[in-house]
Length: 125
Ligand SMILES: [Zn+2]
Ligand SMILES: [Zn+2]
Ligand SMILES: [Zn+2]
Ligand SMILES: [Zn+2]
Image (cartoon, rainbow, N blue to C red; front, side, top):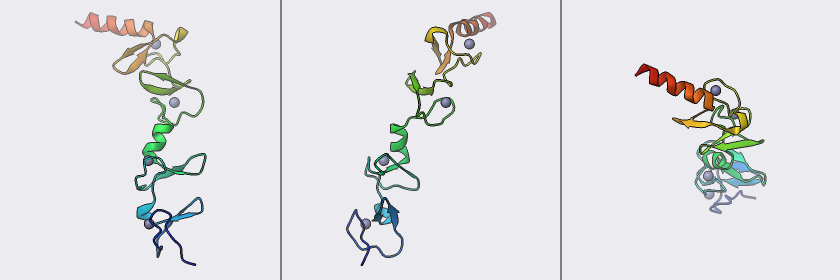
């Protein structure tokens, strides 16, 4: 019985990638989402479909603060995703009272710290 690539149906001699019981030529091993050839690293989704790193990150956003995947409850703020425990004031490291924050150069600040920074800047002028 000869092994065949699920992508091109060609016979496989030598190197092959075996994922989810299916064989691929290494150069025909594709991401199930973008269909591009997986270069080095892949993940398997719930249906065991190979997913390349960039598609995986698009589906599973990472926390802006700690850079780990957010898979539990998370906050979307300032076009970024954050763990609940990572969305803190950049100055004092405390959670935001009432969820109110100010976006200052891509970093969230609570109102007290934000105005504190503004005053400090103002005093330097
Ligand atoms: Zn092939
Ligand atoms: Zn992909
Ligand atoms: Zn985080
Ligand atoms: Zn603060």
